[in-house]
Length: 345
Image (cartoon, rainbow, N blue to C red):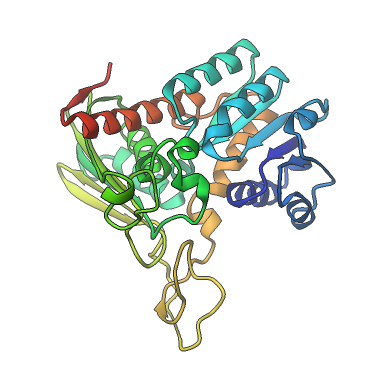
């Protein structure tokens, strides 16, 4: 059994806790957070808790730490965990600044621990199946990808303030698309063109959000193929994740979040359909096992195996991959700000 500590107690911490429990290979030893801590520990049957994560990191029986705090705190917690000799899973984005992400990687290497990047899309069953079909050569050479994550907007202050989030919809949502297309292609991004809404009063809809509520990036890979990535907070109807893959001999289209085999019609509505859905009245398509279909379960199981068996995370899931995704995201912001194409070394 791998012994785990979780830093954080809200949305992403819950996803990690559920996934750990479903692996059957983990003991949730302790959790640390500044609020919601008692409720979180009761829900997931975590025996010990403390408000100060540094106190939790002093425990010798913790081997692996999940970092599930707001983006601007990732650097501090990851470095402290690495210096305590713990392996680390860090939620996306790896950091709010490229310089911070590099410092986190240096700390992990110096202390000889694994820094693993939680990009759940890479373990989503539909996306992995799509990749296996492409790897067979079924659609020929992959020429162009489109990938988006969109929803109506976050209620969290930490997603609405640049100081806490690092940006807006690009860094908070489209970072999934960026990490995914880079893994799917197995190639590096060498050039980007970006366009984003202006933030605050210059946003399309959410004028109280400091960061952009809509953004796109056009990525060029080293083999000259292209990808379009999008993140926005202007899409009604719940979480909408879609991927399209265009090859020289075929096409694959994946509806990751709203392609449920269930169709429900309800006059009164019901408790939950999909993440960020505003209502459940009328016709809806509720998720069957959202955590599994989005890749959270298999992602966490992979990380646990990496610690238990002392092996390296697969490409796309390493700290280095989180850094690359962040570099591309920041290049998109720079392109949008300066109105020009940005080369990535």
